[in-house]
Length: 440
Image (tube, rainbow, N blue to C red):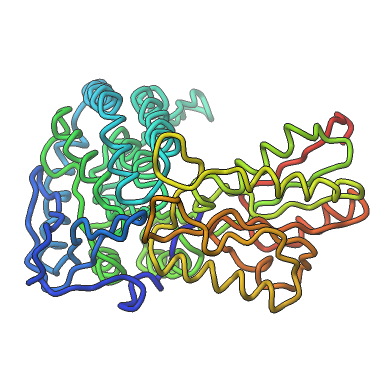
């Protein structure tokens, strides 16, 4: 999975402002209540469609991190002893709270991240599905019993909560990915500290508030903000027993190494480069619509974005139709929009540099989204759908994750060549095949 890496925490990539700036500050959520930070440095959160400063996010101090860890640790034993049925009832109530707040959370996501409304609602709905699963997970928490394993020997497996957990989530799905993580931790009897992206923190804050309304006890769910320094502080605490991370390869590799060296269980989902193999016998119209939606939905800022298509033989003739379909997409954040802005100015600049790199290395730019923006927009982090053809495996735009509305096309002669090309790529996550043949 992917997000922005540690580079986002550098001052030139996100605005760091002194506490004297007159914008509202996002609080932490510790021990069941909002806690104003006493830190001196803050990160600005801007509306990516307009550039408007929305609020600022603190980098948690040592004392604030200690407070969150202490609150979670103090809550651990009581939450562990809470019957599974009671935990499930609380999660069912949380499910109702989230379901009743879909539009509100979606509007938060659109404002901070720039997702078009349909994508923002999908962000919440996909997370809600995992929350619903967690409501019934209690039946799977009992360990198996093995009778008469040997003479006079039975074996009983008991599954117990492991303790305080840590969730580190990216900007690109600020509701879905937290909802992947903290409901399951709570269902299994573990308190958790969430560290959302400092670029888009408000959806997680809303979820924490809803959790308290649903009856999650104080200290069981906490939220602290910040960047790399905050993560380092959290991982240094001996009370942390497990971490779940979704983000870039660079950040995730560092977190995994640090966590495992300290004996912390680590689950890290990192970068991706998804491929779609297109065979000549594909359903033309369905394939074109599917590729355009998968490549440019959420402005390409998602782990399952279809960033690479491999055209086999005569399938290369689809390129002109793909270009035409992509040109018809509407930029904006209104209900009738298809493609929103990139999350930050830095993200836009990085994608523009990758486009320039593709041109320099000899790829053919058949659709250039640079400079595109909605007719009513005078600012914002806009890049329209972009398509490269004649891409080779040695090019930077193929070897690296672009994380923007850029689709690259590679042409091969045979299906076997396409399969071998996909398998050689160091990234994974998803591959799809467009064909009308069940044999393929």
